Image 1 (tube, rainbow, N blue to C red):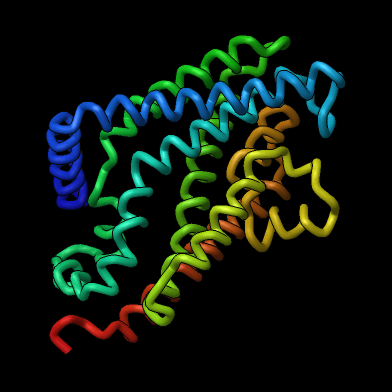
Image 2: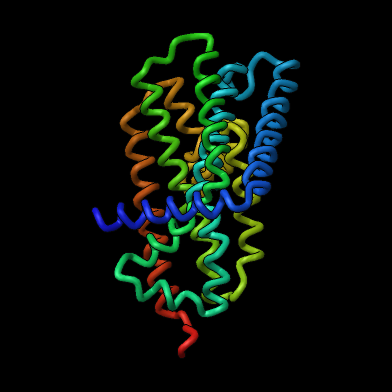
Length: 262
């Protein structure tokens, strides 16, 4: 464990030093995400100009949910996004060889090696918006619930990263991830709306099969309504099941990999 932590600190140091060499890109990403945040908040503000509730949530509650989406997206873009973008290129160019022989878990290494320091300010901005949304809520939520909510958002980020990886790994057989990547991004859009807005069948899919609802919507429900034993067991089962499936898929993918030396 100490070796993995020390290695990750090296990743962080290298990523920040590299990002500061390209300052225009660094600040352009901040600007683009700020526009994304403003547009989404304005979208729901317009909707609530015509209704008092949306899917049973007040504007204050929906604003917390939207900021949860921002926070998950910022963590994913900072920690995982660059790595998932590079993986198909490594497979097709044969560069994966260099990572499979490392004396650490290749799956861990390929998922976290490239920390997007140029997205780190966006993570700070998303965290600030979350603090603002929680403080602006019309009723006290309680420190314990807020901590649990933030922990569930971290779990949601992990689920989102696992889902993205599940759609990327077929590149080992298809030699392109473009089509599945488009499907993955389309599914991700579903996580940006409260899942209670969808029909029953789609809700079941989003909660259990392709658990986009567990990314931000279900954590918000826990914040407002409390955590039940059934919901805790369900989230745990989905996380363990998806992680197991991705690990199995990775083993099958590596076994079928035609390296540059083969």
